[in-house]
Amino acid sequence: MTSAGSWLAALRRSTYRRVWTVFGLQQFGYWFSSIAFQWLVARETDSDPLILSLLYFSILLPMLLVSLPAGVLADTHDRRRIVLVAQVAILVISCTTAALVLLDHAPVPVLMACGFAVGTAHTLQQPATQALVVNAVPVEDLRSAVVLQSIAMNLARIAGPAMAGLLILAWGAVESLIAYGVIGLVALLVVSRIRNLPARPWQPDRQSLVARIGSGLRHTRTHPPAGIALAIVGVTSLFAISYLAQLPAVAKLASDNPATFLLFTSVGGIGSLAGVLTVAARPPATPGVTPPAAMLLALGTVVAALGVNRLLWLQCLLIGVGGALQFGIMTLCNGVIQQVVDDDHRGRVMSLYLVCWGGLLPVGGLLLGTVWHLVGPLAALTVNGCVAMAFALWVLRPGATRTAPLPRDPAASVPASAT
Image: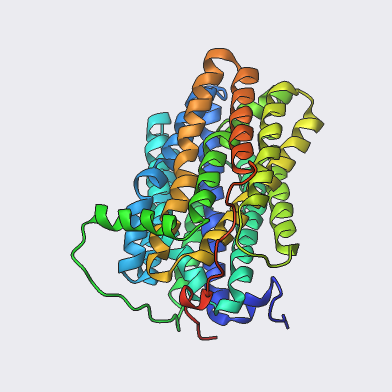
């Protein structure tokens, strides 16, 4: 049995275990589809960095376009039903894409369109799923729920690419896309069994979509340090981890073996899991952004080093350290935000988190790919790393406010949940 205060404590709750399983399956399936799309496009274009950037942009663009409306939906509609609808869409998209590839009717533009559809379905359910994670636990298990959520994401990041890579190397990308559909079906069955979620008081109003989104933005300003945490996530995605869009090209800098891309993906996942576990081992503290800002400073150094180095073992080390820092930043900022926001705005604020994370990532990837194409990897990665370091130093400047100014009663923000 897990004790209260343990980072495993949330697993005592049967409702949380189901929500956590659904979240993990969503992430696992996403990696299956992402690796398949990247593999197919890299094969067709000889790992062209600009085309790979466009693919990454296509898959993650919905996080920029759909996250905010999806956050409003999560605050105004049944969150469980939103997840159900999204999982049905994933089933349809995965089967359609697999059929197109099997019939040889999937050139690069079609793959990008299918990637956009996958990204849309994935984005639609994310604010609702992240809010359900918190709705499924009482206040004393909130920190545990957030940490376990990040662990599930990283377990999927490790196992997903590894298993997708094995399927692709043994049979082909079609099998990976079919597996994505099967994972979606399992998630659909699990979410249909989720019960006993707490009722969320909601007073309908006639505000427009834009006004509701604006309310989420104002909420982050009145609940510090949520705004700075979101800014750290945004800069991390835009500059510090945009190299993920170029991972096949980064792998090619060190080796001509196409399997190096899959190796880098798995190494990054292992590093990410290590970063989350390190965060889990930290004692509870007042919500603050000093630790993620320090991690961003280190991550900027890693990004700059990726452009200089060409040794395979050192690139693996940098990718692993980068993964650890990336998910350490995201997990810490997620925890800060979840602790200080109110539940009636949780979907909207978490949609802002998704915009800053996944929505800005394709923009950063496209920008990096364009600069890489024009002036080469050394200049592109060095500039990105320096921008990330400069912002981290600004957050860490003496006299800056980086913690919640007053203790908040989390019971006002997070509803209790039935076990």
